Image 1 (cartoon, rainbow, N blue to C red):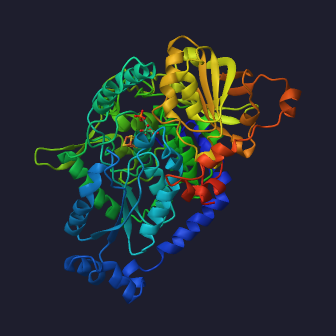
Image 2 (image 1 turned 45 degrees about the vertical axis):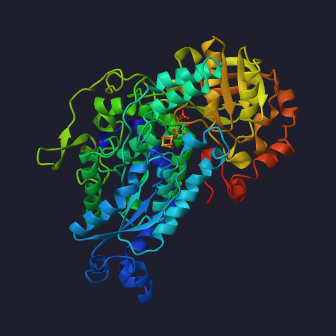
Image 3 (image 1 turned 60 degrees about the vertical axis):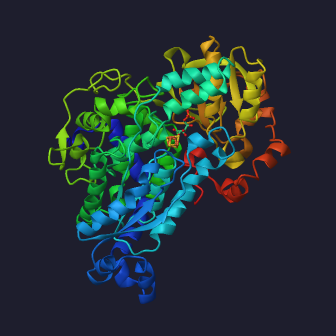
Length: 609
Ligand SMILES: O=C(O)[C@H](O)[C@@H](O)[C@H](O)[C@H](O)COP(=O)(O)O
Ligand code: SF4
């Protein structure tokens, strides 16, 4: 693999800047976890009653293994539930892991479970207002599990949107433990994402009814496994591969297959090997590892949610990153993958073309990704560029990737990228700082200048669309959607109506202090606007009819209002009725503390600082 000397100078400079900015925080973090590493192992350190409680539920053999033989004990943190198709396969994982650990002379216990929300189920409804905060709830759940403090390593079972970031944030607060993430893989390809989007747009115009729309949706989402668009969940998988936190190539192998089973078993021996190699997650996730994740996101047009989540993940490891770091990296990282919403293909076609392994190998060889970083595999990033397979005897092997992509319409090498720069762009101007995913927006829509139409809720925009009053060029401003206001929901339900208007030839864009789904894309959207309107941010000053300009080429977002008038404007206030609506019912009251304490989107929307 390439040495650091051939690393692209911008990547080296951004990494150094992050390292310098983080030095004090990171140094204190490493000192804390190294002190924890020096302690005796859990069951030798805890009191007898504590130990008895910890193993009371275990079998006699496991008790022997853990207490008498002092064998390594692995804590499993699982996010199994039946609501996420991606997590449903986890139901049987703990038993398989426990059995494998015993075969390997170790032991494993389920340390705890964490909640997991399916954003597809809650999209457009009240539950989406808990979605972002479920990330830190998952982090706290991970801490509750691992704080039993009787483990020598951890296996983290999580795939979807906030679950991987939450597990990672939680595990990094136990940075003294070696950790491996265990994925379960994508569902098979059903109705294509583009065909699904077409039926949605027809439904938005009343051209098809509920029965036909439901049939299309169930043809797209049809069985256990992760949804096949390249949204936040599958971006998580790509980033974990680039961070070396998966068994290499485990991300997109389908669930309930012999290869998937072998990879899950292999994760057990890997995490035990990490313990032998004395590589805890707090050391493995260093500045280079975080930058590699940022690069992987940019090279594949990954989810905009990671401009929030990975800031929080980095912070959990004592590392400070911001949107300027992402933007500077995006300027030199080529776009190598076109997976829906950035193209027509899905993750199964991405994997078949070479998948994450191909992306990593291309970037490392070109000096566009740190190559000499420690990973779950003793071969480091070299192993991340190989694909797993089972031989005739059913044994697990890794094979070198073909030299070229298996499908140039989906995946390309560095020599001929889809674009010379990454899929995400920072926007700044008198409306605040925001981000836009340009990789999914048609070229001729990267600059939009149009009058503002202002909404204080997504429902109000949907109502206006239904009443036919949006048939014109417009920039929809949907404000009071920030983390303090209502938990910063994804506003993905706005994509079909805005796409219909765009399809009619109108110049259309969205500007919001809310989020979009990782699966959003073709309508230009300046999102995560900070500071948010409820915190007095400039979106509160925008009025219907103001001329706004979103320019993803120069990276600006402006209200074209005379400066003195703009300065004199008093920001609008959210109505009491809206404030009341978002404060109660359907669990929202329980998250009032997080709404009060949450940091800005650019600070990772952290709620624990
Ligand atoms: O960030 C994401 O990737 C989304 O939260 C995704 O997990 C969710 O499911 C969306 O809702 C997309 O799916 P739909 O287009 O079916 O809503
Ligand atoms: S990808 Fe989204 S919709 Fe699919 S299972 Fe995961 S959270 Fe749910």
